[in-house]
Image 1 (cartoon, rainbow, N blue to C red):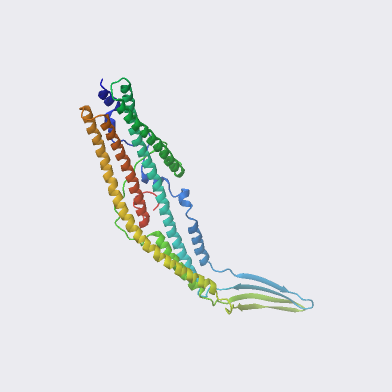
Image 2 (cartoon, rainbow, N blue to C red):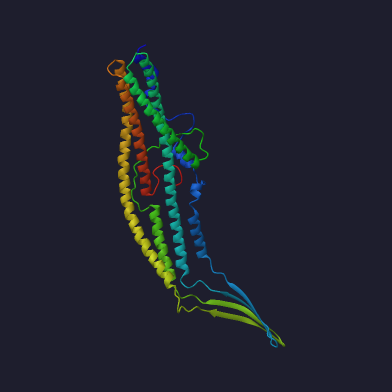
Length: 405
């Protein structure tokens, strides 16, 4: 058998089709992964603390003040004993209750919007972790397939060179390529191990040997208005809350505290009973909450300015993210087509090699070019998916299915 025939036999040319991720475990999609990390996952539950505080504040603001029950006794020597029961209460009729409750409700709405913004960020992190896992799995399959082909070819050529049936220079060139492929495989194995460890940390119940599919690209978003972004909504509600708090603090005239009780006199032949009425009113001569009111008004101005700045930046960010996503998505699709063409180049080089029109160096270069095209396609796929996540964050809404909305 000639060196050419032996080389072709050992390298198994049908295996030169684009490699797929390893098999052996169930196939997992991004949507299934996001659904698996469900609402009871610590990643979601840990975000709800501020909302719980805001809802508690709404309940506190809506609660009426408690009345006070008091008892007093006076029994001086030689005089009748006096017992007094007194129930006092200050009705919330000073104009503060309404703005205070409205401010608490605005704070709760801000907390809910902020929770949605945080959930969207966590969803982006989950999508990033999944994409890293899927890309690392696909890259490992590409690198292992390429390394296996090159190593088998290098071994065959080494043996033929030792027997004098092929060129030693060609064998050394292929051996150098095999060494580079082994280094690439080591890096791919390490990257895959890190990606799997991150997924295990997020999804302890992941099926053993699960094979992730590369996430498909989302459809072009029909709505590009950023007004519904949850972080902007949270800022808007925060401005309203601060305004209402300043309004409530501007009401410094309080309602008087009213008291109703019963008084008895006993002793020295006296037996007198009768009702007691009291009223006390705080006169705002010195303190009228000027400091707290000024702080609330200043906070409202700062939040309004911050909201205006964030909204302006959000609109620019959305335009930039959309342009970047379109560019990288198109490049990724073109690179995937080029990777498919690379396999056709390899098949053509094999045919030329069989016909004696190409040498081992040409074949090695074709394999390397196809390998580089596969890696470039995966790299651009990863960048396009990252741009898609950035666009999702800029719009403030999910672009794909799965996970919390």
